[in-house]
Length: 117
Image (cartoon, rainbow, N blue to C red; front, side, top):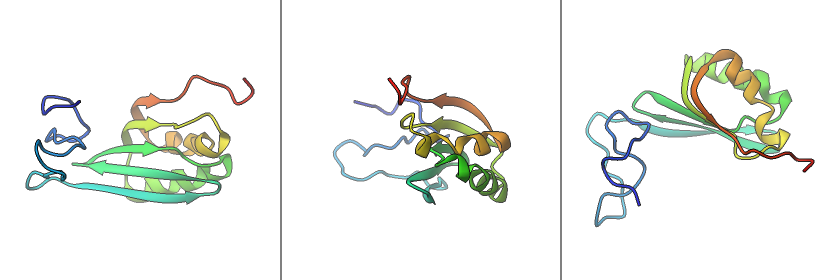
């Protein structure tokens, strides 16, 4: 269970959980939050923005590397707080190379596994 003292990607610390006793997240005035999904072949990629900080989840196939580079460049996103690879399948991590060739990342998360294991 999370509480209001937990860190989040938002400067305001709102996190992504409902306020106590409610089913909705209360956004502080002036805060921003968005999720954009991208079709990257056999998978999806998601770019989460909260108060000007970004999280990239997956990146598609290796062939999508240039697309991920172009998306971040077009949006002027030169830094990602987090990059998340949800699994080791090439459909999820192949395009992350393009993203990381354009933007830096504070923290990356990926499973410690092999498709061949």
